[in-house]
Image 1 (cartoon, rainbow, N blue to C red):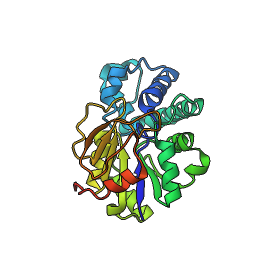
Image 2: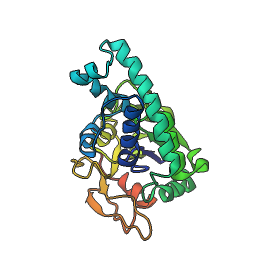
Image 3: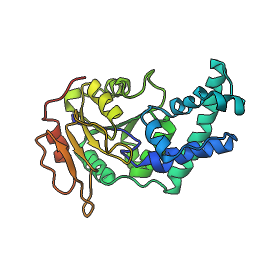
Image 4: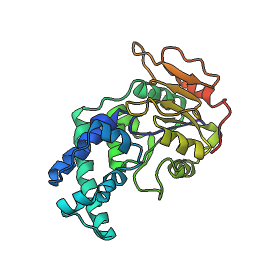
Length: 261
């Protein structure tokens, strides 16, 4: 049976620039921290998988630690990160439900096609599971979201580019790697998919347009929709996309040789 795994951030919606970044900054403001990440700062931080891991970089700034009276012991830092992250997740969900992050082109359409064809669907992300579910429901609606398994947050010990999240998704869904295609937007996600022995289609997002995606089966600007065409940036699959990516194109991608991690 054919299987479709989605990443969340940058794939279901352009969540990094319009969701996670302002939610981080709102959290810093709420806790009285003299920190505000710029778009340029976040373009580098986004290469770190996981929100807590990004916030943990603040503890490396000795001047900030002293000025803000942050904990220096590992347990204290862990507890502080959990508190920050809980607040950040709430701020992020508020942004999701406000409509600040519309679904990326083609997501709702391709999910419709996949459900109709009986494909197995899942989202595999390093973001907190409740945040992932919020984005998924906003992108495709609650009814279609029920067709998905969701794997997110700290369910695995290592985050992308480690393949652990996709290995877990394969185990839990019983999917055959040769019948599974992943939609990702970043090099970290691509390497995680390839490391799990999966074929990967990349829809580049606002922070990943310049990244090396050479291991991908197909690289496009988006999945596209009628009247909102996708651009093919690289293609080593038998697929011959038109204005937008179809389920038939994904099936063709599954016939391409995979690159094993």
